[in-house]
Length: 195
Image (cartoon, rainbow, N blue to C red):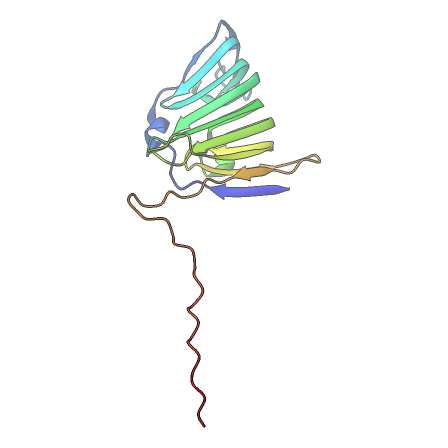
């Protein structure tokens, strides 16, 4: 079973122009060599933290793949759980966690958009109200694909549990009175009979 939803806001566009930083307790890596078709590869272990602007991904271990210019083209993060979060252009926070996150900063299969695929008990929540940050729309499933460029998502369930989504009600405008309950129309007085 699959679902698709579009969030009302767009992920923070300035994130795409920021450098990607990765910190960890240790790393082991090789850059892609000239004339090689094999990508370079870096394995980070222990308290891994990847940031790019407001995008933040954490985990226990991450494997990064580098292109011919030794730029990150994909990072696979494992954790207990691995986490991801990002602000949108309205400064509302998206947070997610899963057993595994497969992040591609620019995925050619998705029009060059950044994609984070959360797999294994995946959960994503998104703030919906700048005034009340506790109001969250939520999504759960075996796999959730989050577009880090435009805040759209798809999800699926591969087992007996369905995907599950929760949508918060819209706030009434400030100062609006609650809706009055409907009242039945008043009964007409009896009319006198004509002789």
